[in-house]
Amino acid sequence: MASRSRSRTGVAEVDEAIDAFMTAAAPVANADLYRELLTTVANMVAGDPDRGDLKIANGALREMWNSFAKFEAESSRQKVSVFGSARITPDQPAYHQARELGAALAEAGWMIISGGGPGIMSAVLEGAGPTNGFAVTIRLPFEQSAGSTLVDDAHLVRYKYFFTRKLTFMNEASAYVVFPGGFGTLDETFELLTLVQTGKENPAPVVFIDPPGEDYWATIISFVQTQLVAPGLVSPDDLGLIHLTSTVPEAVTYITDFYANYHSMRYVDDCLVVRTRRPLTDDALATVNAEFADIVRSGRIEPTPALAAEVIDDDFVDLPRLRFDFDHHHFARLQRLVRRLGELDVDLPPDP
Image 1 (tube, helix red, strand yellow):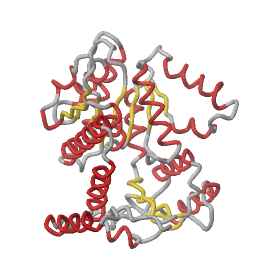
Image 2 (tube, rainbow, N blue to C red):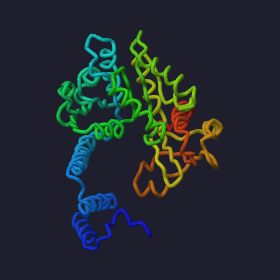
Image 3 (spheres, one colour):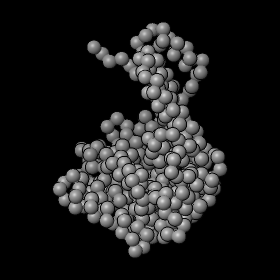
Image 4 (cartoon, rainbow, N blue to C red):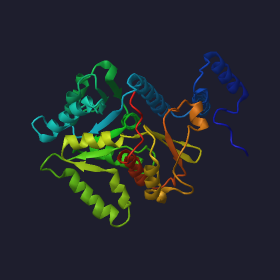
């Protein structure tokens, strides 16, 4: 039996009602996705799930919509999600470094996304200032949302669920910095690494900061090397997803250098399109093909104009881009390719 379209319930009266609503609401953009959302709700009504399940679905969707609306106002600015312990106190080196990091990233034009609690979360927001950070808070019985007082209401997003809050940390950020922390920090960090390692999150710089004289992350990386890499549980390349440093200037440089030429990427059918800020020279393109042939299933990495799907979506069509048949497996190597784009010579546009 053929599967039913995701935009149809199979019940004529319901589908006609959805059609009528869509005609009346007339959303020009993303009409297909709005129709699928309405169809999903109609299917839930027909299935009549447990009330507790409905509360979760309703609450999650409401939280996501509120989050999307808040971040939309700052969509033009790149953002860094910063994780770390709520129990770090203002007299500790990590607190001072987090505050320094917030100030340095804000000066470089970036915004901060912090958990909104005390410790590292408050420190980095203090450094960034009230207009350069978002506090994404969650209610916990044993922690105060101290960081939420450091931003105005437009930059404060409250959550009930950890999973919707985590989605925001990943969905809205273009880079990540992690300070020492407890179970929550480790949970966020390893989920982040899993998402990048498996391609569920686009390549992005991930920086671990050990304050001078401390070895929190160095010890954890050593554990990964001996207990995960050595027995083959993760690839040696996966350690390349992490940059360990003890200084804030190095952390900021690593993040900004990552985007020196790389802009963004998307898949069009089976083709990976990597957008750059400036076109590669012929020599640089030859170098990329020589160094990363191992992640190309067939053909070469080559320049391309915006593809038809990108034009339809008006998806940064004026930027230069590369396309290739990525193997959908070696995502740590893909991250290395992205960093390499900023290291190679580029054809600079002429001075105006």
